[in-house]
Image (cartoon, rainbow, N blue to C red; front, side, top):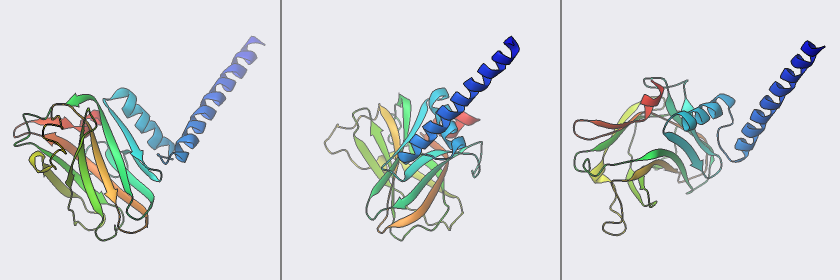
Length: 216
């Protein structure tokens, strides 16, 4: 009798856990974040076990770790926009738990990554990378890529080519807390997907941040 009761309690407990997980995924779907259970679990793992967290806004846009298609290593980043409205900016953020000091790297440093489109984007789609400091001040650099669909292209953005701050000294290069990817389409579009891999921040000699290293 005790054995049967024990098994019954185990089954009830597992059922509650699975229901809670699925409810959480359904709730996440309403906010426009990953709807795939594996993608959601990977995002949670990264947030809890690395020094990175992923987020996106507005709705119909999400960023998550992706193991199915990558240039190298274990994971790439997948940015998906289910329904892109005309002239709306869709942002996908990588938040660092510890601020990154890039002041000494400003002159010779750069952000480098591989990018691939899974579907043709409308002509004149604007794609930007932004650096955000602890005061939420943003500097941006526009990305130009013309690789064919399903082909990886190397992007290298010198730090000195990012936009100037709104006021002199208002951006703190010693406290970078977030890297953002922003996409804005000139017309409404469906099913837009970008893959990002080998995302690194470098100075002349050293890799200062390697996003993919967390999964190696």
